[in-house]
Image (cartoon, rainbow, N blue to C red):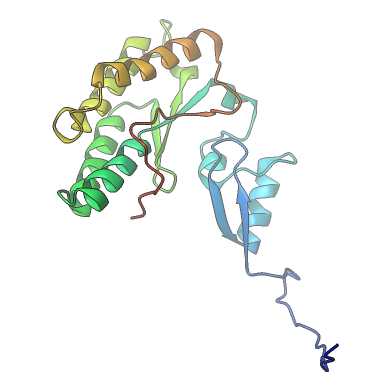
Length: 206
């Protein structure tokens, strides 16, 4: 048996007494994985007001309390991943800049509706259904559906992914929106409404 001499030294940590300057945690609400400076992580935990961790976007939006039951999270990132995997990496007939342009276009369309908010980091949309209804100071459900359809149209699926049945893809969002409006329901294992298209394992990184 080979024996080696080992010298142990005391590691001097920063003033925060953490083993690392950055901590990685997953947002309880939007499921985003965050790498955060230690002090930022502590402040977010304090602001969260409970044992779970909420990211900065969710804390700023007030999604770290019981009111988040009125917020539907949805994303179109699977479409961008498909463009990246299929058209950019595989077919090589699309530029990253073109994908970025579509991302910006879909963001501009969605943000035209004041009940939609967008997280740049996760590319998630947050739709506040507390502001949706037929009463005063609320917009009607049809406006949410109309904005969602406009976002899907801005993705140019008919041109860039003609193999995808756009009407079926659109209906997945509209059906989920109607269900959420009635029952405030999303499956526990699918907190984010994000239908997949194609078989894409890579993830686009801008």
